[in-house]
Image (cartoon, rainbow, N blue to C red; front, top):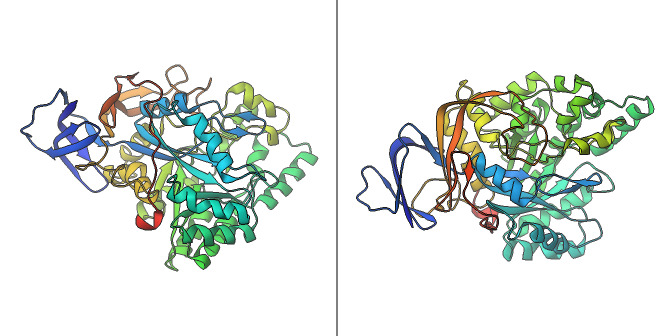
Length: 460
């Protein structure tokens, strides 16, 4: 099979031109104008943007959390991602305290293998770092291609590790050529505030937000960056939400240390006023919570300044009946919201169309940077000969409205209900096959492939 994409407006993290792309099998074979080739199928991309498939390095599919599971599994979640122009996701494996890392790897692989529609990789969340788990890290890097290891500075008793374990993990991961990523919030302070609000009978979703003030994230981000700098281990802060945390990274950069930052689409577009909608605010209960308008401005600026390298989703969806577990107590509301399908279109409509970022920056933070940081470039994240033919054809002028009635995520509400956007995914190719065409998925579950990743030290 071969495909010729003709006359597209090709956009990468650095380039912007009109041309043709010739695909043979799963990879890009040639790029140019008026290519002298004969293809099995020709796609006319006149008037369309053509860019590399987006990569979402922060998703939680079928994840056990707070007594339930996130509602998108690998089939529904990766299919919804493809509908939105995301061809590869990286999910988080969660080690159970007391168990090995490989126990968790085998559990998550069992969920994903032969079920994913789109391509996927894994981060390993280490919740119990000791001599035994330390010995597993080399094999996970060398044999399984898992090169990023997540820690939680919150959720004591389930996920949180202390600073001693953090230092030990960083030393081991650095030695093996990996990276440590972090949920950077001060768990002890948050637990104190949760208990305080509950004791005062303050149970509404608003108090989820008020239990995680900006200082809890800023302090933890600064502490993580300092420890990463001391150990020399590359670090990555997930789902950054606020100006205080951004300033911690800014100060860290002045010391020439390797700490990358990711924000998520919701923190650029939504704010904490949504928590004032009585229990309806539970739709946006996530950790860290939505912040203030001034934080949105800081994050947009951080993207343009190169301080924030990635825009992800932290896609962790729950159905409304699951959110109702916390109807009488905000601390029991499952944390997370659905976004995997809308990230690309939201960032284009609200970012590029409104002049907040350029087209090249759009591709950079959605695709190229995640591929480079997490060891998949140049296989993923670019349009180049030899790269996987993961390609999005995007209509920049198509007007549409986001709604639960039309999305493909396994949730019964939309966090963006009624949002009117300009710009829509029209066609998506995954490894040389048309995956999405005019809102129809043409791939079956099991087409998605596990992507082993290169050592981080070789990429950054």
